[in-house]
Picture 1 (cartoon, helix red, strand yellow):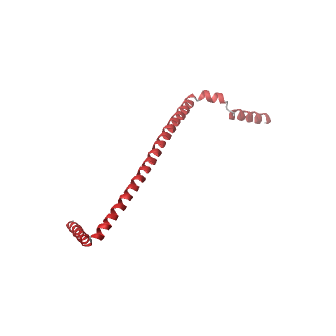
Picture 2 (spheres, helix red, strand yellow):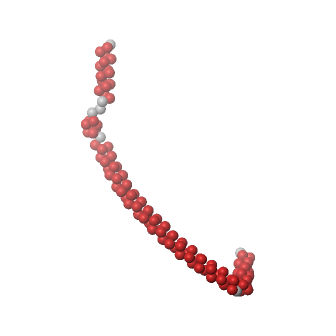
Picture 3 (cartoon, one colour):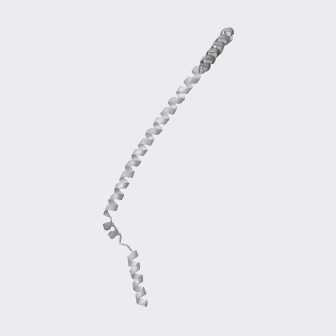
Amino acid sequence: MTTATTKSNSTATSNSNVDPKAAQVEAPFTDKATEAAHHAVDALSTRAASAEHSVRQGASSSAKTLSEKQAIARAKFNEYSGKTRQLASENPLATAGIAFAAGMLVTALIRRK
């Protein structure tokens, strides 16, 4: 019985040790598919990095342009609000008349709907 057990153990041990060369010979399709997948992933990674760089550059440019336009809009707003205050303080009766007319116009438009 000892011999049978030793023989079955050595068979199990030899079956668990797979020869790496035999595995490569048995799976050429898997190797080719793996290599193709790696190439595809590398190409996709390169394209994604390029796209990300372009998007980041565009966003940075847009943010810069937006902040410039915002500064211009603030300057114009401050200029025109100052002129409006000056006009209102120089002509209070005309200002009240304009405000009344604008209120009547808005009221008429709201009632129609």
